[in-house]
Amino acid sequence: MRRAERLFRLIALLRSQSISRADDLAEQLEVSVRTIYRDIAHVQASGVPIDGEPGVGYMLRPGFDLPPMTMTVDQISAVAIGLKFVIEAADEELAYSAKEVRDKLSSTLPAEASELLQAAPFFVARNATRPPSFTPMIRKAIQQRELLKILYKTPDKTRCEREIEPLSLTVFTEGWMIGAWCRLRQDFRYFRLDRIIHIESMPERFVDDPQRNLKALRKVKH
Image (tube, rainbow, N blue to C red; front, side, top):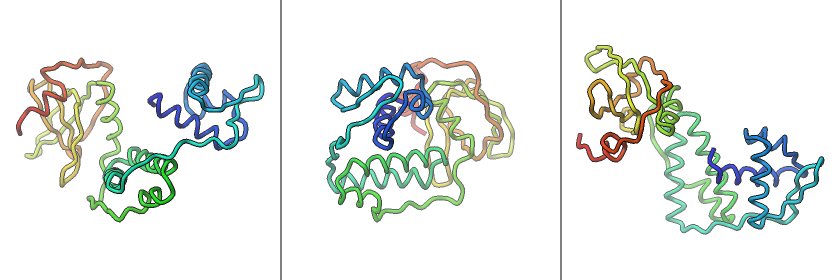
């Protein structure tokens, strides 16, 4: 979890509870107590009115609220469409996160704008099935540059094993595919997720090589 998101969640937890112990906050945010101490000090320095007493806990003074976010109708519509797409088309873990984002944004918007975001008249059509259950593993591997080993079924039903450096996820009409550097072919390749028979994360991390990173992949014409 990024620090900015953690700080937002920290304030949200303090708002929802009369007294919050550092141990409880650490458990809820899945960080150390020392990190909670640092985060509390940071938001206090930013002007958030948090009172604390050793052995008791922390309390957000009554009346504090985050300033409302200002967005145009078109900006709200753009966000609503993007979030609805993720909610409908992505894996369950990412879809749940998109719902959380929508709720967080709603809490910072004026009432009329919040209602528009929640009930925007835009809809996303998708296939009956969501991406495979291992999709979060791929997203994590992309973020942390983890090497993946896959057993893949080609269009002619041939099975092949590949070690790939995952770089991107792309949605298309029939589903999702991963863009990667294939170590066997020493070139960029796309693999459909619905054709991956088995996938596992390897302990090795790959480097951000300018010759075979995401920027290089996007320059390739397919």
